[in-house]
Image 1 (cartoon, rainbow, N blue to C red):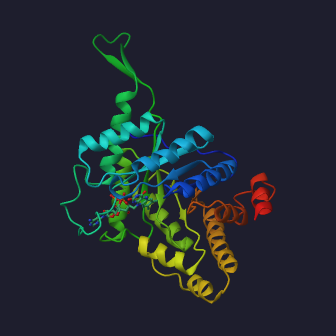
Image 2: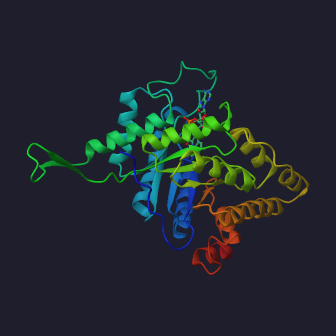
Image 3: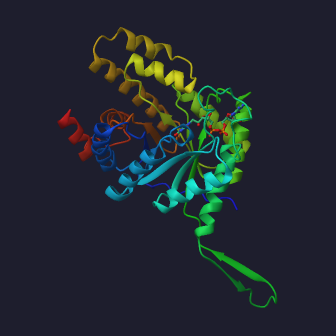
Length: 327
Ligand code: FAD
C-alpha cells in the first residue's frame, strides 16, 4: 500500500536541518550545543548523515539518540544500502527502529572508494527504492494486526493494522544525478521510490531556484505526489564552495564564486554565503516550495541567519535574538 503524505504544520513554513556525525570528542561536545540551538528554532526534523558503507553507524546513532532524548524534534536517520546483504540491511533498520527512530532518508549510497561504478559492489539491494520497501516491511513486522469477520459476508475477513508511522524520505536530483543518463531517468527513479512507499523527498543542493521549480513541474506532471523539500547549502567560503561542488557534481555558480573570491575577510565571505542562500530560499518560498531543508555543516549560526533573512523565521523569534547576542 502507498504510504500517506506526512502532515506538515499549517502555520509557518516548515524547515529542517541536516547534520553529520562528529569526528572526535571535542566536536561531539560542540555538536550538542548546536543541536540544542537548532532544536529551539522549531524544525520539522533534524537529519543525520550516514558514512559510506556504515562507517558512522555508531556515531550517527549517538547523534540521533541525543536528538530523541534531549529535544522534542523528530530525528531522521540517513541509511544507505550499497554493499549490504538483505539480512544486514534488515538488522540495521531494526537497530534504528529499536532506538526509537521513525524517520529515515533511504539512500542507495555511492561505490566504495577505489571501486569503479558497476554492478559488483551493490549487494542485495540495488536501489534506494528497494531500501524504502525494506524499511516498510521491517516496520510492518513490528506493528500489531488482527483479522475480524465481515458481518453478513461469510468467510470474508478484514485485516486491521495500525497505520505505519514511519516517515521515509528519499533523495531527488533537480539537475540530475551525476551518473544518470537524463533527468527523465531521475524522475522515473523518483516515481519508483514513490511506488515503493516513500512519502517525502529532499533534493541535492542547487544554486538557482529555476532548477528546482522546473524539476518540480516535471515531477508533478509525471505523477510524483509527495512533498519535495529543496536542499539549501550556504557556501560561506571559497574552500567550502569548492568542496560542495566536488561532492555534488553541480556546476560552479559564477556570480557567487567571484564574490567569494574577491572578499578578503572570513566574516565578509560568510555574509555573502548567507545572503545568497537567503535569496535562494526566498525565491523558493515564493515559488511554492513546501519547506526548506538546510545543510547546517554542524553549525547553527549560519543556517538560522539564512532562515531569518529569508523570512522563514520571524525577526522576533527568541532563538534569532539569542544567536545575535552570542555572535
Ligand atoms: P538512487 O536514487 O537510487 O539513484 C539516483 C539517480 O542516479 C537515479 O536517477 C539513478 O537512476 C541514477 N543512478 C544511480 N546509480 C547509477 C549508476 N550506477 N548508473 C547510472 N545511473 C545511476 N550518501 C551517503 O553515503 N550518506 C548520506 O548520508 C547521504 N545523504 C544524502 C542526502 C541527500 C539529500 C542527497 C541528495 C544525497 C545523499 N547521499 C548520501 C548521496 C547518495 O548516496 C548518492 O547520491 C548516491 O550516488 C545514490 O544514492 P540515491 O539514493 O540518490 O540513489
